[in-house]
Length: 96
Image 1 (cartoon, helix red, strand yellow):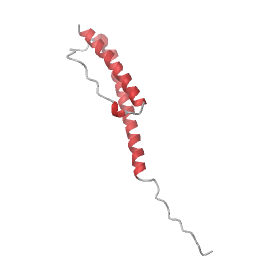
Image 2 (image 1 turned 180 degrees about the horizontal axis):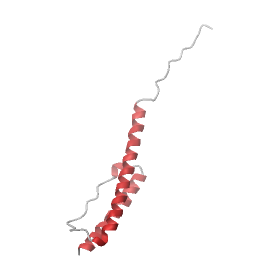
Image 3 (image 1 turned 120 degrees about the horizontal axis):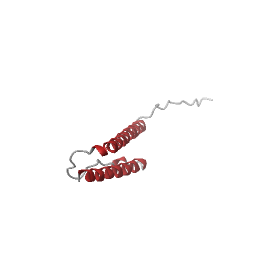
Image 4 (image 1 turned 180 degrees about the vertical axis):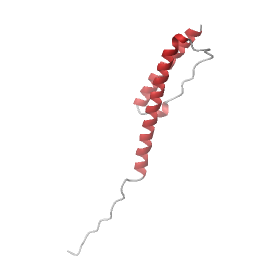
């Protein structure tokens, strides 16, 4: 019973990660949500440990990608708020 519940949970986690990747690709990171497993699962069966580790690695990579994208967005917003260079004054000599 525990193996079936864990297997179902890992399937749901894989689906959740796929959805989160799509949300990130659509540039809508505000729609990213945490994964919440349903109910008590008990101890992870050894037969599913490799799959769980692989999904955790995918989750970590997605978290890193989100962090990078949010940092880029914050930098772009900061640049919009403060131009890189102040406009230099220009003078026109109208005595000619």
